[in-house]
Length: 432
Ligand code: ACO
Image 1 (cartoon, rainbow, N blue to C red):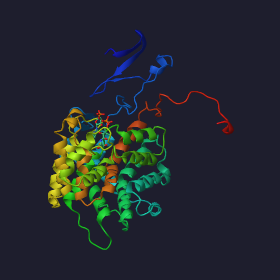
Image 2: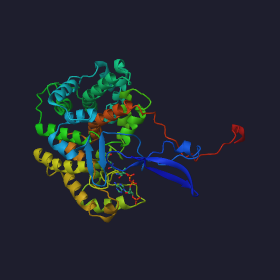
Image 3: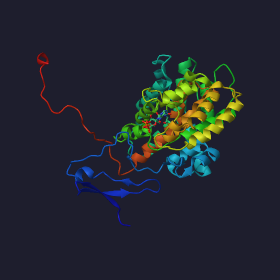
Image 4: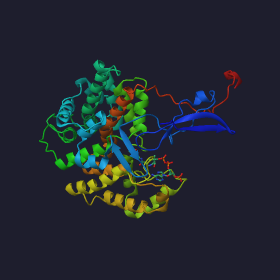
């Protein structure tokens, strides 16, 4: 098939002819990688915030933001949420296809039998003040894994990459639960490899050595579902951070720590915690109008947290699934009368019928509801991003592996539009 191109003209003269690249789904891209050379080193492109820039090839996750569609390796998120499990989804994201029973059993065994962390890693926690934010602790401890695994340091060996991937997915719940235990001053609970991925996490978070712990299956399944929904979301800020950090060949544990740091921001994974803070600040239904007006006021920095998304200009499909689960979980934990949930529903009802939000396609996103579920499971709001990071570790690792094993991959190195001082001479301090 003949290659399609677009021409860039300046004053009617063609200065560059750029190939159009088309994937299997979604908009085509204009390949501008030769633009600088073709224009005689005259032009870069300018797109801060990546409003219209594809940063890489990827075959992991597809989003159609206009339709509100999300596919992992081609499978609709709705089907995976209903029929699959988090570890099966993890296998799918890492390997590209659904596992056979044998493949799933082997993968599950690998993950569930590498859950312990080095005893000396536990000392790191004690260096943090008791009231340190759990995400800050998690960034430090996950990053410090890079000091423990010198045997799998060569990122250019596929075997090393797989070992690092399994270690990260297996150990991140243990690290996360210890972040929580440290923050509340309780002893760390060792993992129990007989339990499921999420069952083990719940036990490590909520069991105490002096009492029997009974696992609640609704909580276990709700967590598994939330993890499926949060496992990947293509080139978002934290995934792009992991890719950029990893593009230099950096240690994978350090790269994942950088992803957690990026996820923490309230415009990204920190939104679930910010939603709860916002609902608490709004306080009751009579205040909603005031806050909707604040969100619409350009001179007020307040935004409705949990609303809007860079890619979805329709209802976030994950939010739809979570919304239903939210009712079920709240029912089971007899929390239906949670005033914050009532407030959230009312806020949603008003916001989705308000012209400001309709015109800008601002719908509730996944984090509008996830915090509510975590809260009903007894998980405090400062742990929400930690929970998100456990699930997203799978996506980060899948993207990191895809990038490193792609022979076309290069170190990421954006350029800039410099608008600082022009060249000038140094002035001695006595003459300034
Ligand atoms: N409340 C009020 N107004 C909003 C909101 C909001 N939550 N989000 C966007 N807008 C408005 C903007 O003011 C802007 O209005 P204008 O066109 O009149 O200037 C317009 O909608 C477009 O907003 P942008 O900031 O340009 O959109 P962008 O794609 O850059 O931002 C983002 C997306 C960061 C998610 C934004 O919607 C936001 O801040 N939402 C709240 C935080 C949040 O929930 N983040 C979680 C995202 S999901 C995730 O990461 C897992």
